[in-house]
Length: 154
Image (cartoon, rainbow, N blue to C red; front, top):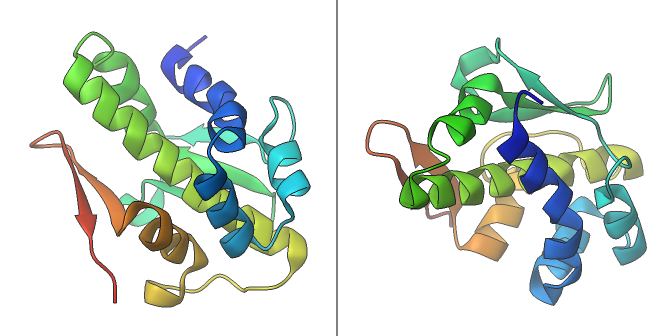
């Protein structure tokens, strides 16, 4: 397996969301999926396929592709999970960042399934609204300092 740490993160999403009512409510609110649909689509082998891509445009961390229904994650960040596996501080931050990124894109997956919200940019991006609501801002990672930071939104 090329990305074992990423695989563990993805496999843990169902329990993470199911056992956190606030997180589940935030995903329901912004994805427009029901609780049952959110949880069903987070089960292993269900929901959107997660692809690791080496050619992400515009330095993106990830994106949801409405043409395929897949979530695409930057290979740079998937590789960093393995690279820093034995550095607990960096590993924990990267896991938090990757989890928030996947859930951000999961919101777009839900929007696509329900045909409620078209993909937009900036504050009106439902994924960013989810992050702002649940995490308190847009979650970012600085690879130079290896720190997570939040960009507060209005």
